[in-house]
Image 1 (spheres, helix red, strand yellow):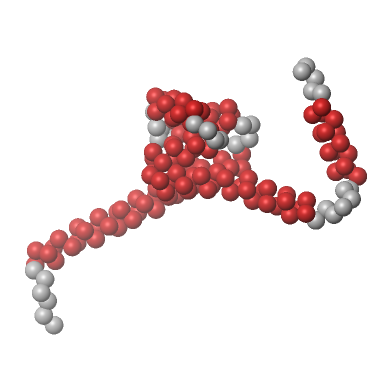
Image 2 (image 1 turned 135 degrees about the vertical axis):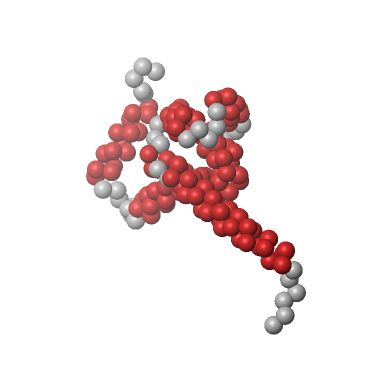
Length: 154
């Protein structure tokens, strides 16, 4: 069979294949990097935005060095100024800076899905309770209602 490729074009394909395989390896390493850096945050980051921001600073500025201190402070100010959950915006921004929109979206999903799945499970449980609540649940809710009426020191 006759080939219409020139010898020069054939030689140039080998480095191109090597480059493609390296790029694919780098992409898979980057996705693994995002998952490893973010997977536990949705399960363990309790305490609200002040705690979240400290966790993000320790992880992404001090340990991983994905952004520097000045960038972190600018993102912090911007995320606090815009409406919506500031810690979610901060996580999305840090991961978007490190890996583009898809990296930020992946981090958002990893951050949000554990809570969403938990709330969905609780809603299924609550829907199965029926008209009469069990005594321990009623006692707990009554205590919580009383605590919200008058908090000590207010």
